[in-house]
Amino acid sequence: MSHQANRAYVVEADDLVPILTPTVDILPRLKTLAAHFVSKYNVEPSFFARVPGRVNLIGEHIDYCGYAVCPMAIEQDILVAVALSKYNDIYLTNVDPKYKEFRCSFESVGIVYLCEVSPVALCMSLSNQTFMDLYEWDRNEITYLLSTRERQLSKHELATISARAERHIGTQGGGMDQAIAFLGKAELQYLIFPYYFLFIRKGSAKLINFNPLRAADVTLPENAVFVIAHSQAYHNKASTTDYNLRVAECRLAAQMIAKKRNKDWEHVQKLIDIQERLAFDLDEMVTVVMTDLHEQPYTLDEICESLDTDHERLKKTSLISSFNTSQTFKLQQRALHVFQEASRVLAFRRINEESDIIELEKLQHLGSLMSKSHASLHKLYECSHPSVDSLVERAMRCGAYGARLTGAGWGGCIVAIIDKNEVQQFVDALRTDLYENSTKDRAEFKDMVFPTAPNQGAVIYTVSTLF
Image (cartoon, rainbow, N blue to C red; front, side, top):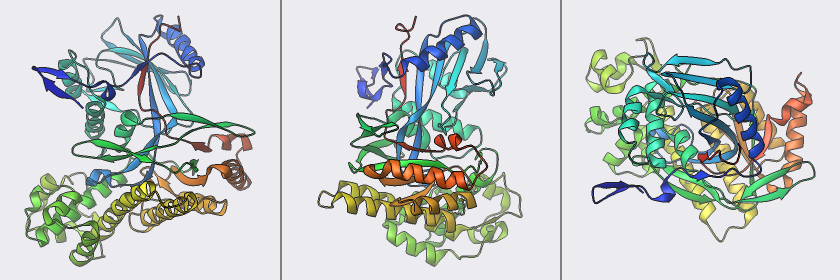
C-alpha cells in the first residue's frame, strides 16, 4: 500500500500497474495495433496498455450501497497504444473501421478519454468479446494527475479516480468495474480441449470492499469454470435513468429507515451507512426492511412527508434532481435485494474457503447462490430482461450448476458455473440451442458463448521488442 516515508510518497511495487515485456501470445495483436497506429499518426507508440474485461460472479447492484462484491478479471481485454501528440489535441482511432475516429482540442473539452494525463494519440484494439466501458476523465482528475507526476499512482488510486470519473459523466456506479480492472491477478495453467484450449487459474476471483478500497483473493474450486453468454439484448446504462433510479431508490430506502429509527437521515447516503449506525447484521437488516418499508411504490410527496422535508431539500440531500415529480420508488424491494445479496456474497466466499466440502458440493452450493441472485435481480431489483431470463433457463437445461445475470442488467450477459470436465459439452450445447432459435450464422455464436478464467489486471507493455 501507499505510505509516507521521510516526506516522500512511496508506493510498494505490488500496488503499481506492472510494466511488462510483451509475451509471445500477445505480440501479434500488439504488432497489428502498432502498424495501424503508425499508419494513422506517422509516429510509433510510446507504450501499450492492456485492460481486462470483467465478470461479476456474485454481488450485483450492491457496490454503490457500500457492500463487498466478488468479480474477476477475465481474458478478454482491450489494448491501447499511446503516444504524445505534437499538437494540443486528443486523437482516437480504432483498428475496426466501424468505430468512428475522434479528435478534439485538449483546451476546449471537459473530458479526456481513457487513462492518460497529456494530449495523446490513441489507437484502440477492442476484443469482440469485451464488454467493458471506456472510462472518461474530467479536467479536475487530469489536474490532480498532473500534480502527482513526480510520483507513481497506485492501482487503488487509479481505480478510485476512474470510479469518480464515471460518476462525473452521470452514472452513479460504485467502483467495482474499475477496481477489478486494476486489482485482478492471475497465475495461469493450460486446460486443453479437442477444439480449443482454456487458461485456468487455481484461485482467484476477488472480494472487493469499498471505503476504503481493498481486495482479497477468493480461491475458487479447482474444477470450477465460468462460462459467459450474451443474451443479444443490449442496454447502455449511461443512456437511460434505469441504473441511476436504482441507486436513488437504495439511498432513499436507507434515509427512510434512518428517519424511522431516529438517526440523522440527511447524513445517510448508502444502505451500509444505516446498517452501521444500527449495528445490526444483514439478517436483522432484512427484518428492518420488512418492518419499516411498505411494498407499494412510494411517491415523492410521501417520502417528503415521512422525512419531514420538501422537494428542493430532498433533491440536494438525496441527489434525485434528475427525476420528475411523478416518479415512484420501490424502496422495500430494492433494499431487500441489497441486504440479501450482500449476505450471498459472504456465503459465496465462505463456501470457497471451506476445506471439508468436496468439490462437487462446492459447485452445487455456489451454483445455488448464483441462481438465487438471479431470481432476486429479476423479481426484487427488476433489472433483468426476458432474453436474459431465457438464457439463464437454457444454461441450466444445458447442465450449469447455477447461472445469473452479470453486469448492470436490462440485457447483456449471463455467467454460469460449470465443472471443467463438462465445459466443452456445455458450450457446444448452449451454442446449438441459441443457433436453433436464431437467424444468425452458427459461427457468430462462438463470440457469444465462451469459457473464461481469472486473469491479470491492467498492465503496461514496453515497445522496444516491436520495432
